[in-house]
Structure formats: structure tokens, C-alpha cells
Length: 170
Image 1 (tube, rainbow, N blue to C red):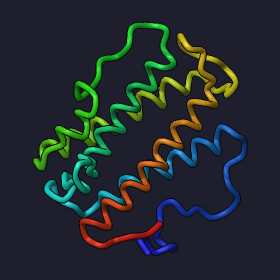
Image 2: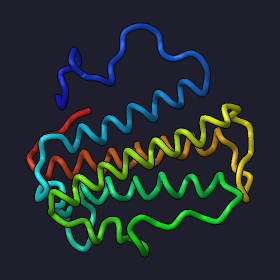
Image 3: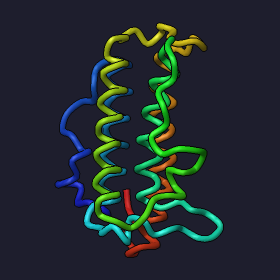
């Protein structure tokens, strides 16, 4: 097991959250926590280790990618000019993920900052049916997409971590 079920911070006692929005936020929180757990205890070299050629996917690349995606989601709900990318052209979030502690620290800092900014922007729109941005995306659709994105990448993180040190789990 990855984490002892009695010590797993994702396990909570009692009933689940009340309401659709609270449920979606709970799932998102747990997937975000899972990603961080998959990265815990690894050094910069391990975090930057690529999967298998030709892929440039790594745990560090996933962290950078999800920071970029969080920023882009704010573009989806904005009527203004898009925010600039964090890492440059397509796949730079993965391709330029290098095994340096400063890069690891910067990536996790960016992820936390971008998550907080997206959460704050969406907190202004608690109606899941409200449509936002130029494309009029529903808040509900964006919330489900966010969960899907983290869930998919947590699956990647599980395989990447297993390749690094053999750890697998929930």
C-alpha cells in the first residue's frame, strides 16, 4: 500500500461532503494531494527521470504541466486577454524539466500559486450552471474537467513512481 489507510490524509471519517460543488471540490483536493504524495521523498534527479523514449514525461514534468493547465483554465473563464504561458511553447513543461533542485522548488511553487489563483477565480462563481468566458463554459464542466485532468495524470504519476523506486498504490 502507498499509504497506511489509517494515516492517509485523503481518508476522512464520516459522511462525504454535502452538495455537488463540495463533492467536486473534495475530489479535486484528493487528486491534488495524491499527485504530491507520488512525488514525496524523491530528489530532483528522480523527479526529472523520464518514462521511456520517446516520451519526455516525468513527475517533475507533470507538476509543471499541471501548473500550466491551472493557468490555462483561468483563460477559459476570462473575457480578457489570455495569460501568458509559464513554460513556453507546446510540451516545454515536460521537455525542459531538468534535474535541479531550484527547478523542482520553482515547479511546486508555481503549482501551488496557480491552483490558488484558479480556485479563487472560481470561488466567485459558485453556481455550477453559470457559463463563463468567451466560449461560455459551464462552471460544472470546468470542475469535472479539472478532476479528470488530475485523475489521468495521477495514473501517469503512479507508473512513473513505480519505475523510479517500485512503489505502487492508491
